[in-house]
Amino acid sequence: MKRVLAFLGVFLVVLLVGYLQPVFFPAEKTRQEVEGGRHAVSHTALPYEEIPTSGYAEYIGKKAVDFTADFGEPIEQQKSGMGYEVLIYGKKDADYLEITVKDEKISMIKAFNDSKETAPFSIGMKLSDVSELMTIYSNFAFTYKENKYNIELMEEDMNYRPLIAFDNKTFALLFFNHGTSKLAAVTYLNKETLLTLMPYQLLEGEVIPFSTEEQTMGFDAVKSNQVIRIINLLRIKEGLPTYRVNTESQKNAQKLFEVLNKNQKNILSSERAESWQFSKEQMATTAIFTLTNEEYQKLLKVGQLDKKKATGMYAEPIYDPTFTVLSWFSDSLYHSRFSHEEKENIGVAFSKASMLVLMQETEKEISQTEESE
Image (cartoon, rainbow, N blue to C red):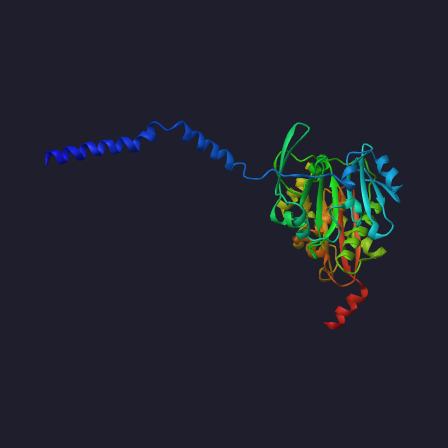
């Protein structure tokens, strides 16, 4: 019996030493593997690949005169009031093209035209077509002016606003129309412009703020007309009737713009009013303020417009109007406001970095609606 007890005692001591040794004397290799595992978990995203530069992407960073030498003079040239100019090509909607020029160099090209210069992309293609040509990545980590940046795309971003990198260190942002899921436009841009517009989540680094140049008070008719053209162009791509423009719709849009600025307390909660003020102070696209649908309906009521027969958008600060409209049409939250199949009037009030869009039923549509009631 004593031998049995002695054996059990020795066995228990050996067992305890065996189990407790890793606790008091962990193996160096094991610790290194754990540390390596932690490092791997914090960087699960695959590094993105760059595709060969071609077409319009080759002109990003080059002088504007190089582009005009190859494609001719633009039909229109506009000042943005944001430190850049816009060259517009294409009298026909099918040929429409915008060139953004900053410090005499091209910083962005927005292509709506189905040109060989957009290859390997083509207007009207589906995301599945793009996926067959290249991988769609969710994370982009890069440096700009010795600062590190890390961008993350959400699921809707990858489906409707994927980002593609070129080997000349520029990018293409593909805008797919939310109504058709077809490619509506390709936006080519450099790192600075991407970090200024920043339509994605920024995990590391700070967005580049912008400021408005000294501008005259009142409404900018040129920008208003430009926004209307882009909205109608995207409506055509979706097979919807274009909005009609008349003096009354423009006056109503300007009226609502002024009503909003004078009657914030009747339209916004105190918290939302603070958010709006914050966006004005920040002047960055990550702090953009947009009226909710409910707030816009309140605005229509205060402005004494029939909220049953009107809808629209209000947003600020706006760095690039065309880019903003493309973002709306690719976003499930905002696209529905522009997807009505009925014929409507449109008015756009644009002042400095603020934009209000109003869509109203035409008089014919209104009378038909009243007769049916």
